[in-house]
Length: 474
Image: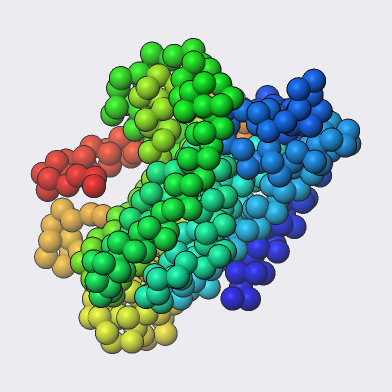
């Protein structure tokens, strides 16, 4: 798909530019693990006792095997240049796989672009992709596994493509976060095959042919660990236990939730969770849609961090970077499916659409949708002739969508006030008001205190709705 390749090329270009910037700032090797990975890779050969035992038994070996020879050159060892360029290439691979996956699932180029933009333009994700850290290789390998599994399932064939086998091994040997994702993705692929008509015996055969590759990779690593340090798997002893989340499963899960939206945005995370839930429900209720369960397996990125915190591992926010990248993908999926539902309404396949004024105004003005009412407390200035739902016979109804400008809590008051002043000045500009109106957006202004009060009021209102309706996250 040309659009996926184009987005991958753009991602690599952005990554290279970011690498130059961070290199000049001296931040490429700022994280101690970035340097440590280079040390482990170099010591395989440059050591008093060189050999494969130097690979170690805590970190998985693939990143160090890739960098073992390049790090023998002082230029690459001291700057991390080769490892950083591998990470930038991984950004391109992850973008390609994510964009292609979204295109296959939704058929929407816009959705693919949204997913790619949320991934590449996230400063936290972008930064990690210019360093020798191992998360970029993890995201690239797992993204390819999920993409190729999603493409393989509908083919209804027993043979596993060589590229998929290699990707399974690569993902298994990159970071431990991949293990629960691979397990979930393989289980989802087998379930989808069964739903599409494969006999139980066929599913068992496919389970063997798929599972043998990551299982062999895990087994080989464990044998190396046993020979090297005397333990089959080293899961503790290399950190001081942190009592903050130890033994607290719910708090550990909430820590993963918090860390994910801190590395992205809360809105993206909420939309991504809704999209993932939608995929699971559709996959379980429609046989033809069963392959959608494969990409939904990416939510398992949050499993290992939650279990680690529960076991007493110190909190590390970067452990949620894969989940933040996953949120970008699912946000793109949400855009694609919403566009599909809107298109169904416009084509006459559906009779009713609940959407925002911003997303519907173009179709309303073109006569392709007939607006019935707006859900806000007052009439929209963009569509003043349209009554509200409350005016249409449902008093008290209000479910408006609004956006607010906010800054981090630690921002100095003077800077926050300057931003507010400039934003208000821009909103008063005639060209800005015209552009917003054209998009169906109705600008409002408020003081920080009024905004805080509105957030508090609506939080209480929706909390009551959730409680009364018995709504719960699943």
